[in-house]
Amino acid sequence: MNVIPAVHAEGLVKTFGDFRAVDGIDLHVDQGEIYGVLGPNGAGKTTTLKMLATLLSIDAGTAEIFGVDVRRDPHRTRQLLGVTGQYASVDENLTAMENLWLFGRLQGVASEKARRTAADLLGQFALEEAADKPISQFSGGMRRRLDLAASLITRPPLIFLDEPTTGLDPRTRGQMWDTIRGLVADGCTVLLTTQYLDEADQLADRIAVIDRGRKVAEGTPDELKTSVGNSTLQLQLTSPGDQDDAASVVRRLLGEEPVLSPESGRMNVALEDADRAADVLIGLREAGIGITSVSVDKPTLDEVFLALTGHDTGADNDELELEAAR
Image (cartoon, rainbow, N blue to C red):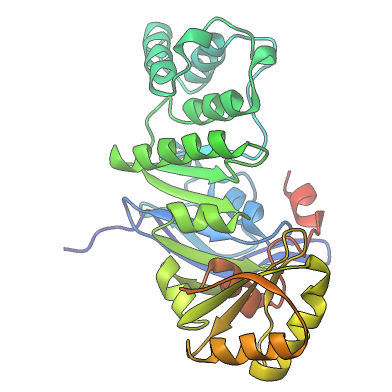
């Protein structure tokens, strides 16, 4: 028995003038999974999500949500999904309860049912004690949880999360991750965009890597990591100022581009053969470069993204796509 995918898109294209924000992207999201779209600002993530959510027209290509054609039946499409954007859509002047009730009423839910649903969602997202507080008194994490709750008023089977943890502290990000996992455990399908490598690694069952409007790779986190090597040499340099010289040693010996963390002095090197770690260590010692710690582990998504695109997820900060898509 064939199960209809939650999302099936082929050849999606979106242009803004001469700028091609999305350039022929294919997506296939199975029901009940967390599917991550990973890429830097300006890669086309937000625009892709907005086309699938009927918030932007599709210039070329096709898209279906649970078998419903997005272009031909946008009203039915919107009934099948909830959307949480990068910026909270709640009203600053209303309380949490009033915001959720209003969202319910706007979506055709009867007043009393909207109130009951709002109360249930406030409890689910640990916001019941703040139910009668104005949003202006909420922290960033509380706003994000409320925004996510608002997208669940009608309990849609598919949730779009556009960079759901942007601007949150590590503790609150972890809480949001638990909330997202809980949605899937309750039967939802989640498609999320992120520029955080650890977020994609922690949450996504499968990941599409997007760069400059194109999908450059797709697979499970482990499949993507294996594609760039079997092991990663992780080094902590004694002096962060030695990173450029250390990188030159790696390029000369392995022909590989290491992933650098300039502030911390860390350096990761993808290895096809774990035995080559010894060559790098000897080369660094001969160059007079000190090391405080060393380990060999599985590759990270940092190496994957660098290998696929030639830069890390923070290197391309083109905001044109984001501004045009708003």
